[in-house]
Amino acid sequence: MKRWIPMGNGMSCRQAAKTIQAYIDNELDDDRSALLERHLDACRDCGLELDTYEEIKAALGRQSFELPNETIERLRNFGNELALGEVEGV
Ligand SMILES: [Zn+2]
Image 1 (cartoon, rainbow, N blue to C red):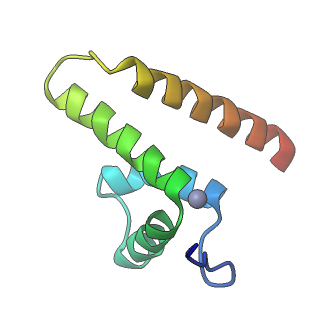
Image 2 (image 1 turned 135 degrees about the horizontal axis):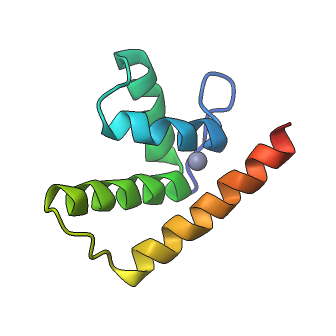
Image 3 (image 1 turned 180 degrees about the vertical axis):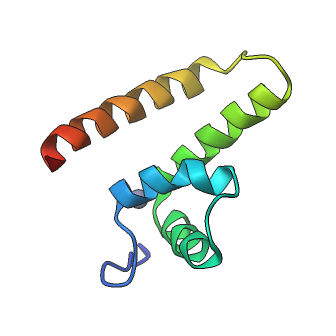
C-alpha cells in the first residue's frame, strides 16, 4: 500500500530539495529536520536525492570525486529539474 504523503503540515518536494543540502551539513534546526525526515521517509524520489548528496559528501570526505555514473546522472537530472522548477516558480 502506498504511504500517504502529508500535504498540509508536510513539505513539498521542492522545499525538500532545497533543504536537503542544509540537512546534510547539519544546518537545520530540529523542527525542519523532522519535517524533512518525514518527507524523505514518505517520498521515495526525495529519499534518493538524499542518498545522492550523501554519496557526494562521502566522496568529498575521501578527497576523491569518483562518483558512480548513476549518481552523476541522477544529480544532473535533479539539477535540471530544480532549474526548471525555479523558472516555473517565478
Ligand atoms: Zn518528495
